[in-house]
Amino acid sequence: MTIKDLAKRVFLVEILKGMALTLRMIFTHAVTRQYPEEKRPPFPGFRGLHALVRKENGEAKCVGCGLCAAICPSKCISVYTSEGSDHNKVVDRYEIEVLRCVYCAFCVEACPFGAVVLTDHYEYSDYSRAAFDMDKEKLLANWDKFMAGPKGEEYFKRFWRPLSEDYATPEDQPVFRGGAGAPKALPGKETVEVQGGLSDAA
Amino acid sequence: MPAAPEEIGKKEVKTKELTVNMGPQHPATHGVLRLVLELNGETVVKCTPYVGYLHRGVEKLAENRTYMSALPLTDRLDYISSMANNIGYCVAVERLFGVEPPERAKYIRTIMAEMTRISSHIIGVATHVLDIGATTLFLYSFRDRETLLDLFEMTCGARLTVSYPRIGGVRNDVSQEFIDKLYEFTGYFPETIEREYETLIDRNRIWLQRTKGIGVISAEDAINWGLTGPTLRGSGVPYDVRKHAPYDAYDKVEFDVPVGKNGDVYDRYKCRMEELKQSNRIIRQCIEQMPRGPIMAPDAPKFTLPPKDKVLTDMESLIHHFVLITKGPIASPEGEIYSATEVPKGELGFYMIGDGSGKPYRMRLRSPSFVHVSVLPELCKDALIADVIANIGTIDIVLGEVDR
Image (cartoon, rainbow over all chains, first blue to last red; front, side, top):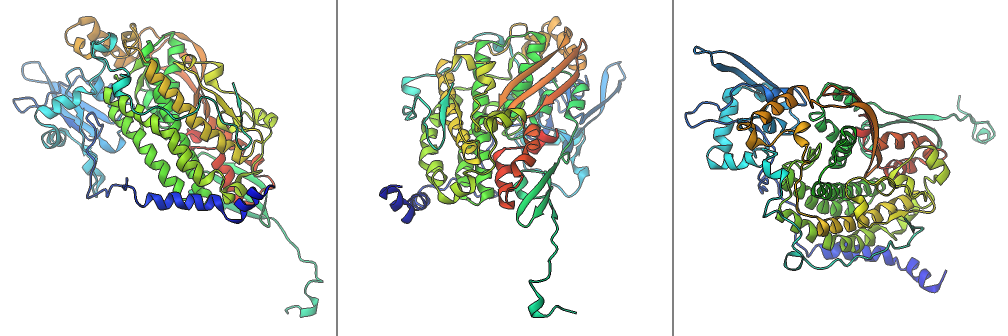
């Protein structure tokens, strides 16, 4: 052991370095959010609480094809239909058991009409389980509350995928811009550093 | 009658081994792992892990789902690296179907997988360090993980259970904002590792005493136990699926496989820290090389949903759409395949059997954490109780994947 190593051991150098780091952190900006008071808006396309889209005439857009129920991995959607007066299909009941849902948004992808969406609402809690067995009225109310208007259209289009452009090469496809878009260069090394019993392979 | 003072010490005191139940509700067992420890004083004589508290039957559930809707099940295996599991599943199904995703999708997947690796490794190291007694690193690493989770949310609308890749590509394209922000992150992240993470614990004497020479497993034993990932590489075996059987864009990027020498807790920790830097390097190369192009394979409508704008205008697309959702892919092959991918914990293998119907006949999972739990009795033998915690942390298990 050299004198330098001995000095490091005696004067707790590595501990002091760590303490200096934590002390420096006091003078930086806090990254913690004071959650219930301070909320971060979810990104567009966030997969939150369900809603059924309302048409201009106030009715649900859903036609009762049952594709959402067929693709649902947790089988939490049930659709009941019957024959209407002029032989059309009428959606009698549309129910989502929200507590069983896994929020994969496959129902949104499967729906050919864009009639079911996931909203940006993520704070739902209640005292009873029954409040989470959403029927058609509750789901339409969710739409009115969280997604109505142009916001809803824009929002669910983000996960209404795939589109034809996914099979093609769009003009404005984002790629690495280099130069102007690139932040400061990587200070990292090209090879693996050998330290503390490590040797590089491959 | 109590013994007289002079009699004490002369009498033979009988000792016996004490059996202690650790878990399943123990904060240091990373979930619901139960260990039965037979102790002689403070030394562990025998350690027996009991698993199954989180069993959900993912393998069986997948048999009743179409190839597409079985995907969210894989999110919930190793729930802190769900993207890597999704990619592993999609690669397996693609190999079964004989589909090749386009270049751009491969690069996007590689970026996502490496982001997951960073996020999983910093959680693995942070909780490991927290178990041993250091809190600061835990807080710093969660700050960096937040950046990555925000990027996941920006791309696919979920932070943890992403369900982002699809058979034959990815769900949607990445945005320019994503690319710029991620590139910025990769610019300062290696510096953060060196300046903050390594300053705090790399040379810290308490950390060194708790990790050096603890939980040693030789290279030969590690291979015999079937360890993979950083847990194996800490013992000096340079086995990495990304190098040995490249998938996605791993054959187009340069990276090193860090290996340890002593096979102890410290070397495995060091491997994970080194892998963070390598993952960072891979992400940077992928962003720089990522070409323009489609993100779904051209023959994708045969096994994933057709373009939405065509469903209501094109008859063929509408039929495909209905059949795919209700029955699964029409042209499902018969046959079986084993496909391995390197997830943050190790080698995740999917053994798929297709019987020509739209659902997998059998989906067997080879999950790295399950294999790693089996080595725990070996690591804990003749160790101290305190080292049991260090050993659980070092094999980096997630109980969602152990119990499936």
